[in-house]
Length: 555
Image (cartoon, rainbow, N blue to C red):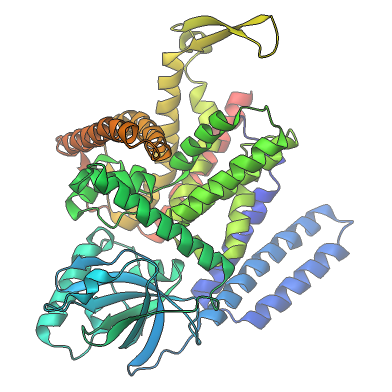
């Protein structure tokens, strides 16, 4: 797992692309000057091919200008002037409607018109007589009258601004519910409007109980990608009902569907806080850990290197199917893209897990949506992987190899070859000390990479993160494997119910253990306030340290 930055030419290009996106976003650069700057930098790159250093400089400047051009083009597409008055709009529901006090909340993807394909967070005032809202579900057409408030003017504490002049009781209810829904994000530098924009939400809307109705919609105006994602969400919802039928309830249901289906809507604020304080929030948010476990499971099922390139195609298709199934969050997309690149380069016998792979993944995602750069999940996911690549080889080598392999257990079995009369000895060697040390190093590297961002956005540091990871990572593997077995055995209800019982017990054990860790004295440090400049300086110092450690280890 040696990382050689000299063999990672895409890494500085990815950094330059990020710099251009940030420059255009922070300074609101127009599209045409960015495009002209990119063309000029590319022309100079070609003209200076005899001068390698100058050519490299202008190539990086071209990457900066390209990033700025992408961001400026994206901003131009999203610069929509929403009317101040109420309007009639229609769309398809793309999240499970949930009751929050006096309102029902769900995400709506608009169909037709200027806002086609854009999303709106809807707060629907409940009717207390007919309860029509109880018949709403993912995939239903929804026609309403109301005002759509721009995401840039929406705050986590004041979603009631979407419902002007609706009465003080309604405003108080809407505001308090928004506070409860987003209390995790109200600290420090987290921007809820920017969070909405990163997730393609154009704004929020409040709808009275008598100003909406269900309709049949023609979804052809939506892109094929959107329609595929909607079909996957409907399948996910049917799976959620299966969980309830098998006996999952309350916190056990909330954690199980968050870890396996990517649906965190049922997590209570108390449960979110427990996972946050104990340092286990990454288990609830689907990311590289979950996709990696699914990838290992699919490789095991398909067969390791028996089908060559066909195996890689099957695995990649399965990973992307799971990504669609769980809602295509940025962290899941990052992991899916990275595994896709990993599988492709493995066929070419190249270094599969490298800075080049990570950089290419970042470039692909940022070209698709430059605002991913400002998504907190995207930032943390990439920083965790980056610092694992940078620090893992050096830190793992701190424990001598002879100590790591000193405690090991070997098992020899004989397997007959299919269609032959011969048998082969297969040796399995289990090295618990190596596994434990690898777990410590990976957890430490990931924590180093994400800690500055966690403190910047949420003002918190979890002290017992190593203890937590020793608990939740093995449990996450068991939970995902048991879930796969449970869902695949749906054709045999007795077996499915039998598998569900230990799964419920394991999820409950995880919740109980994390509550215990969160209750330990000094479990977390609160109210940490870092500026953006301080975060940049911390990361620069860490990068210099990683370079120094690598040079020292090479000597």
